[in-house]
Length: 311
Image (cartoon, rainbow, N blue to C red; front, side, top):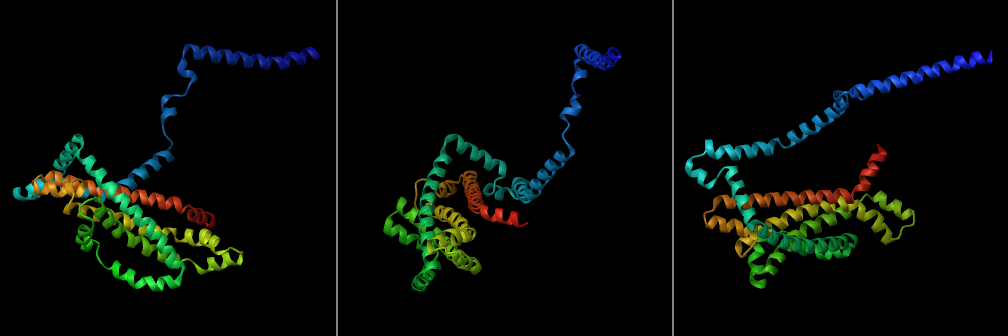
């Protein structure tokens, strides 16, 4: 009886071993039988295809206006404008060829470096001064009442209108250009900092005070984080203003910089080079804006976390 049961249990095991050996021998004869077909292993999932198609479609839709403008720039001067107009408005490919030649010679890199150095120096000074003074003015009401009339006077004075004053006082060197950039970028940062602090929800302040936070901790944990989005709005405006004002300042008196490149190419009748400089200014401003938006998202991550938790 025991022998019969043992033989009966051993029979399936022997059959499974035989099937395994048969599968191994079959895979040795035909290796393709041991692995899935190429179609099964490489075919992406339908969900992945839909996500990729959605991202591509969204990107094309968002860039449709830019692509249409570039197409008009390329085809318009050739097929729609007169030959005399085409001299002063070359098609896009001629501008890109001129930009490539400036890049190969290293000319445009030097102008970009000069403009960025001046812009970053003036923008950094305006950022430090604007945020610091804005926080003080918004926190202390008496200081606001004293300085507000003077700030309103200077805020409504265009920066380019004071360019001759900066040039006469500081000369045509780097000091005048950095100072005019700092002046133009100062007021957007200052005013948005004041507005950001003043628009903090009073309920948050009362709740923080009821928890026993002192003035410094209240300012650090509640006031400043709540004002960050508004402050960064002013910083982005200041970043754009710093580049635009600098280009105008470089057109007046400079030996390097994108503004100098543009006005020098125009006076030398190098029209494609002039448009290459203008295109570089646009791309530079776009890059600065993207960088500041990324910084704003980084410093406002707590808002995203709160919104996600609430939903």
